[in-house]
Amino acid sequence: MPRCKNCKEKFKAKHFNQKYCFKPECVKAWVETAKVKNWKKEKKQLKEELETVQSLMKKAQKYFNTYIRERDKKKPCVSCGQPLGSKFDAGHYFSSGTHKAVTFDERNVHGQCVYCNQHLHANLLNYQIGIQERIGADELIELHAKAHETIKYSREELRDIIEEYKQKTKALKE
Image (cartoon, rainbow, N blue to C red; front, top):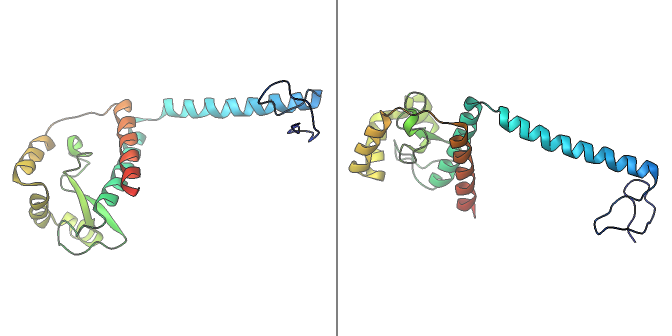
């Protein structure tokens, strides 16, 4: 016999998953619990519906960069060739601020030491040499063409990107 979640007394369950007995105070507690649970679901759904493209963009960037760091953690810095330590950046060849079309293009982003990315402002000349060695000249030319396209992400596209990179990062960690 199960015990009531509210009064802790044993009772005879009439349903398979029954957690409360039928005393008035226990039924009231069960209803309150159900209200809180439903409100949490509703609040989460409202939050998702009201999320702005800008906040989704930040979230997508976070998951994308996490994936790049996981992918490149055993590779050297794309710019200087030094081994990447425990803390390194996901450096963009084309900046994500002005080249939205390649913000989430894996060819455009590589593991880069903090010094090259932040102090040498991406060390672009050496980055170009390093990126060409990694992806090849043809892919680099294609990346240049794609970088100058105009793109505007929708909420749904950004949610898909977030989910995709969550899954890809999880797969790499396994």
